[in-house]
Image (tube, rainbow, N blue to C red; front, side):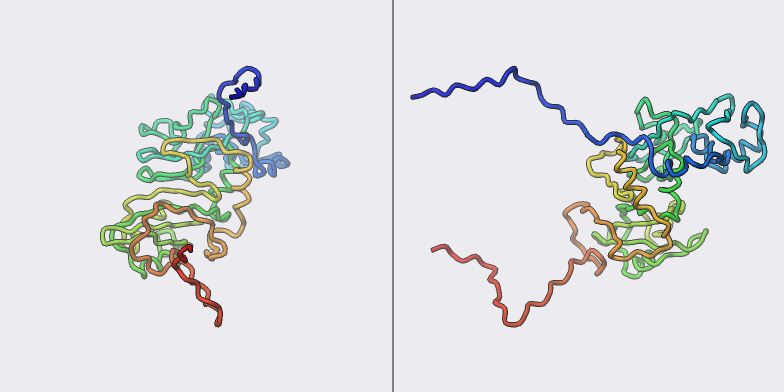
Length: 333
């Protein structure tokens, strides 16, 4: 019996390490489009550096806590050139030149708040980003303490403005469970918009996944971002939200990202988010052709679907005269 000798291929190597070829984004076209604008508002510059919101930055300016080139500035609407002027806030010198932009996707747990307030005693979303090079970052929009799911963190103010402002209409999708068996009438009200204290909502895309007497599982997509809008909207139609999880922001979903984990965004993902934003705005009604592909959150989709978008499409009628296929396989001879 002939023996087969194994062909030598050199020294045996260890296990191959698979790396993500998509490098983390360090800028975006939202920021690149602004580079030709030399002068910007002081409050916007402070907000872009993560000091506070623009309104809170206005309060700092009026209180005389902001210095520009060593002189206090108290006039609102002041414009500066960050490339040539030095800005100090409470003894902290802001140096934006050469600062790399950072973009992160976080799957927020419950009990975590979306604030940059240093005196906050509860866990903050930005503290869960453990990248030692993250610098001063802040969340793009907010998720309340009791909600979970995806939220973006960055230090790029222009990018944050494009993603969070309602006029750009970036869709955000939530997996929602409400108390009780939601009715057809209630779902239609949510889809067409309800009246809240600050005005009427722009409506939402609602897919009924499952509903029973104990509770109903829904998939809700919004383009606007009123404070606690999902919870307040369903409360308005008589259904308390039991759980709420944001599962998609534009083209990004939570697949492979466990609760409490984060990852940097690639340049391609940042540009895809910006491409998904438009000047159409949140007032543009949802249309089936505009709906984004949705994930399946569990195989159990039983219960009354109510005839909404979760209903499977009807089959085309069989042409007359065409043979009918048998559902049973013919026995092999």
